[in-house]
Structures are given as C-alpha cells and as structure tokens.
Image (cartoon, rainbow, N blue to C red; front, side, top):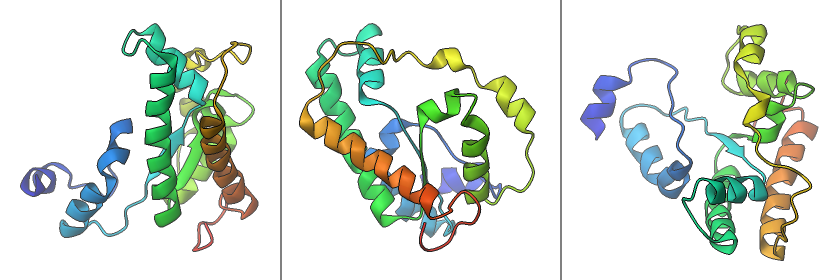
Length: 173
C-alpha cells in the first residue's frame, strides 16, 4: 500500500471521500505518516441520522430502520473519536446544501486546509441543494443514543465556530 500511495499521490493536497474511512482511520494515519505526510487534516462531514437512514432504506441497501440507525451510530461514534483526538474540521452536510450557510462553511474548510484562493461562485454552482433527501417532517422516532450522539457532533461543530475556527485554526480548534 505504501508504494502505491507514494507513487500515486505526489501533490501537497489530496484526499478521498469514503465514509468507511472512519473505521480504519488510525491505520491510514500510520501509513500516511510513514510516507512523510505529517500534516493530516481530516475533514469530517456529518449528516442527520434520519437523512442517512432514510437514504439507505430507499436505496434498498438495508431494510430495517433500527439497523440503519445503528450503523449511523457506529460510524459517528468513530467520527467523534477522531474529532476528539485529531485537529480536524467537522461540519454538517446540510449546511453545504443551504444557500445561507454554504459560503461560511466553504470559508471554514478552506481556512482549515490553508487554501487562500478559491472561486466561491463555481462552488455555489456546483452544489445541488436537491441532494438533500431529508424531510424534517418525516415521522420516525429516534432513540436516545442516536439523539445524544448527534447532539455531541453538532455541539463539536458549534464549539469550533464559537472558538473562531472559521477565521484562524489553532490548537483550540
């Protein structure tokens, strides 16, 4: 794996999107560190648990709401562990689909990644608000454990915002 990564990823910036990465995140940190990538910056995007569960139910991947929510809890507990142990950016997926909060979130993630220049209009044109499949009026009952996990995640996001992590990333963030 190390040789493949070393020959493939030669740029200063690169990454991948795979929610399952949280399952083996320490493994990847170890490999990346051995390759000389010491400034690893996880960008963690969370989604509303019902949005995720309804999405997998509609796609037929899983047939049971309780199982879909349990998988969401497993992944998101791992995301919390990453957020507690690594300097990271964490945001809510729905914030990127909201025209009122998109620009703020883009600024936050770009500051975190030390990207000084970007075309916000291109980003706005690329984002499709119709990707949000969650209807807040869907009548599903969430268990307390799922609610608590989601509250912890959203609290972490709000804490980053309160600490001013949208302007300057430091050890507090």
